[in-house]
Amino acid sequence: MSPDLAGRVPLIGDRAPDLTLPDQHGDPTTLSAFVADRHVLLVFYPFAFSSICTGELLEIQLNIDEFANDRVQVVAISCDATYALKAWAAHEGYRFPLLSDFWPHGEAARAYGVFDEGSGMALRGTFLVGPDMTVRWSLVHGPGEQRPIGVLHEAVRDL
Image 1 (cartoon, helix red, strand yellow):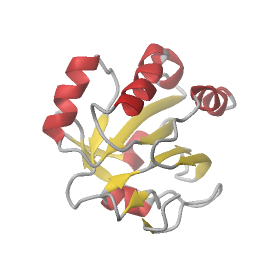
Image 2 (cartoon, helix red, strand yellow; image 1 turned 120 degrees about the vertical axis):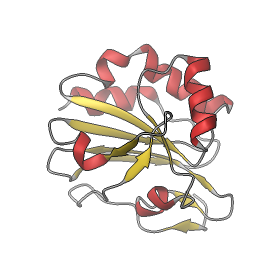
Image 3 (cartoon, one colour; image 1 turned 90 degrees about the vertical axis):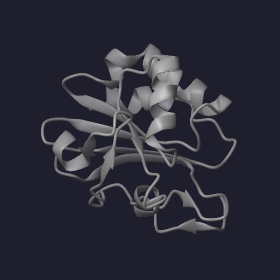
Image 4 (spheres, one colour; image 1 turned 180 degrees about the vertical axis):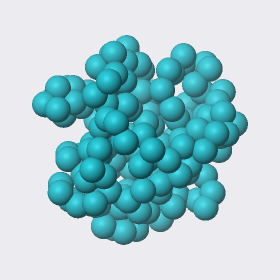
């Protein structure tokens, strides 16, 4: 990983930083409200429309019933503006929230220790947050390193 990372990645058992970010429609979305009745799989990614990010989120979309149900909700987060996220979601057909960490730039990614100060983007950080707001599982990959979709399946299957 880059030496320019801001913050510390929360460990399993740590209290997850709460966040409120606009979704691709501009509606504010708060993590603590989402986890009130189920787990949330937070998927930080570098950029909308990039090849690896598109592939990862399409894998989630193809398996949406496993990642968005009565036990878990997937939420994807990048430092892109809401307008880019709305266009990307419409283009790819994503049926889960895409949150914009655009302004203050990277604040949520910093809180989770996955903001790369040198490039101004989020790394591929994935966190499973429980209804008690604790981190239950996490995985962080650097730039250019694709997340193996199988480990995401395992994390939510074990709930």
